[in-house]
Length: 274
Image (cartoon, rainbow, N blue to C red; front, side, top):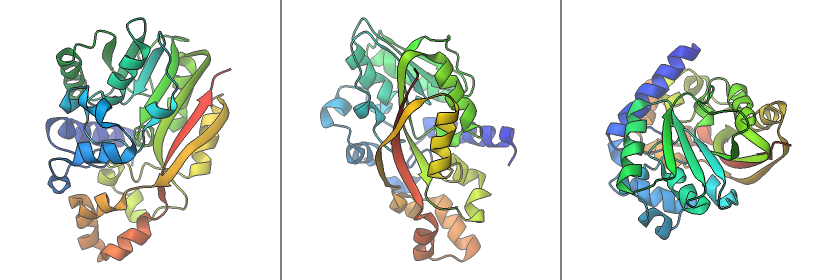
């Protein structure tokens, strides 16, 4: 797939997510149910208190981890969230940094930015702003952030190295990132790798775990450590219309789909800019 084709597919897919219901990293599906976003977020580790203290539409059920729980955010810090979506992690960070702090959410989808800004206004978050831009080219000044977070987004970027080089650029010396993302522990089948729709669903954009960590280190980060690792929720893909299309096209059984996706995991990783 050409890079621009991938970006267009991701942008179009998430524009649809912003306007409709969603599940599993942006795969639009009516099969997830009305409570999918809340239930899946609780399963990841978000608390009832956190979810109840923000606008309902901020939680879109798009994450694969809870990086904000490992970020050790301090009052007065500046936090940048890559691929902010409806703003869930931005609003949690806003509480932690307090009035003296600042949170900037970046997303490349105008419809997501509109939704996040509306959520910020409805929730009266005066220390949060949302900027339209690609995470490969952040609309943020050099050495201006204490922390960068991201939740199930960087795997969507064709050039992950560029994303982490940008993260390094905008962090202050001594700053850190905490990111949850999808990686693989074994090669993915070709039918997944060749699917633009699967790419939008956080599957075929995933790369091997060790390669992912090497990309982070090559960008200049030190003390890179995996804080949490768990299997990707395959049952969501099983219920998704995109997966059903794959099954019909390939003749694959549901057990076969399980086998095809068994190497997909979610990791939460942290690193530092010295």
